[in-house]
Image (tube, rainbow, N blue to C red; front, side, top):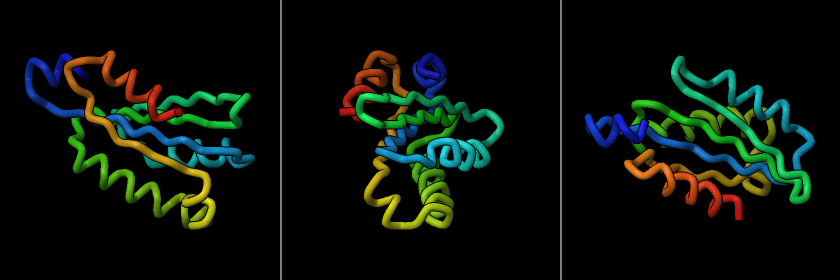
Length: 114
């Protein structure tokens, strides 16, 4: 996606969810997975020592404005299924553009975990 951005100027976005201390991990992953579009890609990582679930969603050909709309839609679904207080207390998210430097995107993900 970074090559497409570099060569053609077509934007893509990366959405990073951090979910702290949840026993609902599989339910959350399933809710998110159900709301992906055809080309969207989701992966997750559980850091047991910190009881932290990291979910990465790549939104190909989606600029930041589209990623914000995606996040709002998903936030409403999560709040509806898990409660607003759970969302505010346990879930952090970050939206990053997929730019021409993949190392910068990886650094951003690692910083988001801290």
